[in-house]
Image 1: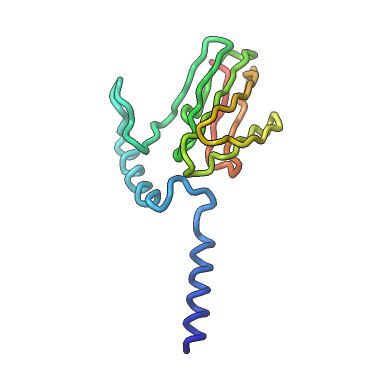
Image 2: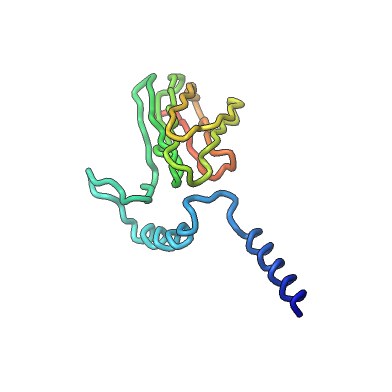
Amino acid sequence: MNKIIETASALGLTAALLVLPACDKGGADEAAKTDDKAAKADKAEKPEAGEKPGAGEKPEGEVAELGGDGRVDVIVDAGGYHPDEIRAPAKSKVTLAFTRTTEQGCGQDLVIASMEIDKKLPLNETVEIEVEVPETGEVKFACGMDMYRGKVVPKS
């Protein structure tokens, strides 16, 4: 009887491990937060002008716009990249300054596949990458697991 219980326990643990997400976006509390975020998204709650979103919340469509060549600070936290979209004139040079601020999530690696870049992002250190804004399309960047995503696009 004990052998049956041990086998059932091992199978249950194995099944639980298989359904865990590959990228931990903030720990065990994230599942509970997902329901709250979905409810807020349904209500289309957005911060008023001048207000900042609450802790742990990511405003939809964080965009940084540049008028030409320049630098954008990109914070990498448990919610992803902030901002996650950078707009600048086509053919301009943009320096993306990535700073990872938490151990949570999968932001330890930065991948820009179109430029064959795969870099580690050390905690609380800035890593700069220069990209040229394409005439059309976008330069995508992501974490190593492609769970966090961002892009550089030409201004329209």
